[in-house]
Length: 116
Length: 114
Image (cartoon, rainbow over all chains, first blue to last red; front, top):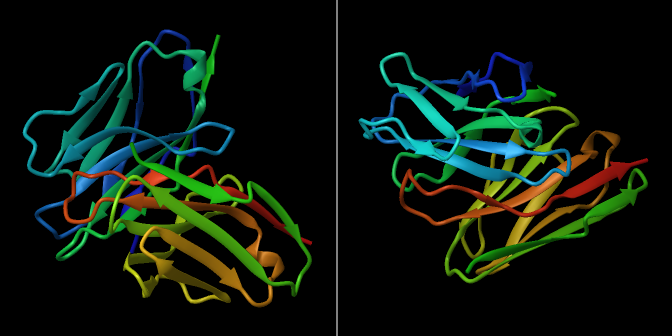
């Protein structure tokens, strides 16, 4: 079964506007971590933001924020004031494991295109 | 600070040839190590992960194998490459024990099997 689902294969956003990238996850664990990564065309994977399952406040990192809705098992990434350099693939990931949190599962990604 | 080195950056190999991709981590001890594969325009598929020397967990049965001969060295191998082995291979490491600690990736190897 899919652990992480990203339903938007591609998104367009106008420069300086905000955009939300969707992510839903599936787990029966109580403790887990949710991450977003950015992958530019160069291929490197850049860690953006983290949300813990016990965190009550939504995580924020500069222009990135994570809209965490635990009951709905969603962890959407919000990018405010989009910039041309935000054009990239974005991956949602979950870290879980019964004892040592050894496994990271990734979604299929969303390709974001920022239009000037 | 911790760094991860992965090489080579690109590789073109004929079908049936062997493969060896190497990854090393510096600046940390006893990391969890991972190999992921990414098909063009697709998500990341976990191939192997390791929690210690000689300890390898395989997530997907295939003609690839992994080894961890030293604490901070992770090697991905194949005896005979298939066309379907083409893709972007990413090595990564994480600190064990804790859901809040991210994966840190190498720059990847683009493998083309011809």
